Image (cartoon, rainbow, N blue to C red; front, side, top):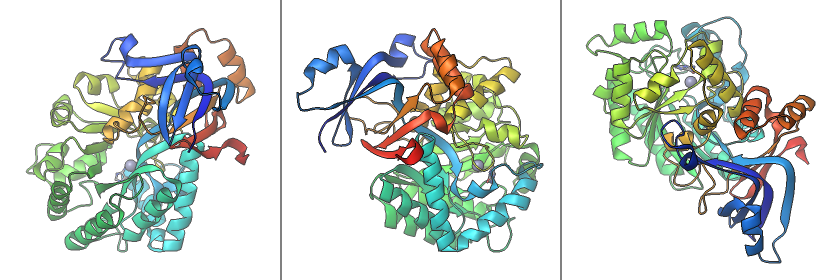
Amino acid sequence: MSRQAYRAALLHMLDDPARTPAADAWAYHPDGLLVVEDGHVAAFGAHADLAPTLGADVAVTELPGRLITPGFVDAHVHYPQVDVIAAWGTQLLDWLATHTFPAEQAFADRAHADAVAQVFLDQLLANGTTSALAFCTVHRTSADALFEAALARNMRLIAGKVLMDSNAPAGLTDTVEGGRADTEALIRTWRGRGRLGYAVTPRFAVTSSDEQLAMAGEVLAAHPEALLHTHMSENPAEIAEVSRRFPQDRDYLAVYERHGLVGRRSVFAHCVHATDDAFGRLAAAGASAAFCPSSNLLLGSGLFSLRRACRCGVNTALGTDVGGGGSFSLLAMMGEAYKVGQLLGDNLDPLHAFYLGTLAGARALRIDDKVGNLLPGKEADFVVLDLAATPLLARRTRSAGTLAETLFILCVLADDRAVERTYLAGRPAHVRGGA
Ligand code: GUN
Ligand code: ZN
């Protein structure tokens, strides 16, 4: 692939702004140039500095009024739940039984899984999400369908077949040995292909036996490149059920700890009701939390304290948790995270929110050496945001005085209409309006 250059405002994060002085936490160029070569970032900087270094043969795509950022990272999402978004009236355990488990049963049919996988990836890309950590269903072929579709698009995507051998309807359960065999077969089949990764995915401690969680720990230990992806401490009734099932463990996290599931490759969705002690143990283990504000509000799960998680040192990223969450947009999640913070007396800084949706997600997924920002050498996964995508966005961003103001306006007002283009490894993977 030849060199490509894009002139626009550029923003990416270099570190966590809650822990790092501003000058070292991000780079912003109001008139910037992004240079891409062979699917990787060749240069990211001020147009005035970089333009003279470009060869005469390099065409520059001029993008006035646009902001280029790294592609967003969704640290927790369920691809089979596309069709349960916006289900009315229930909280977690009822919602699973009433809406989610019936929808997931349809994934026994490979053709259905293939079709939904395409819709799911279309939605990610239309919203500027270039990497995700995704649940499939219990069916091995549901994971085959998603991996095949993501490979064809060259997406950096991590997913896993769900493990659940207890407390779920017939047709949605596996067994200890069946779950092990399917997980091992999927890792063997998809390892090293494109930009795919595998996550060992016990659904949560409510639907796995001790024996199955122990098996998940063994598989994780045997595959040092795999992640562990599960749910934890989302809802009071769920937490009560876990303490009823595992009375010997001092809290929810202890169930996972006992089976070797808590380490630097582990991502725990929600953690809404985690104590400081549990957060401290997550931090000490180097594990990550996925904060899913839209889902936590829609399912009435509770208010995740980002300030407390940060104070305890937990790497925290953002997840849409579709279909519990009501949007595929990480920009919308940043806005929802701000609203949750407001209810807790915290004002989430827009640059911190932007960090959560980009570099923090890449760190949680252990892919930050490849994506998460646009440093030279990284894979060129990026989005072109149109600051005037709607009349209201145009009006508000025009009057914004600072970068933080512009970002906050995007967090509150933007949706997929603001995502003009999404690039995967330097190639357009989504163009708004399909042009
Ligand atoms: N806990 C266990 N399964 C699920 C799920 O599908 N969605 C959410 N939000 N929480 C869960
Ligand atoms: Zn979830």
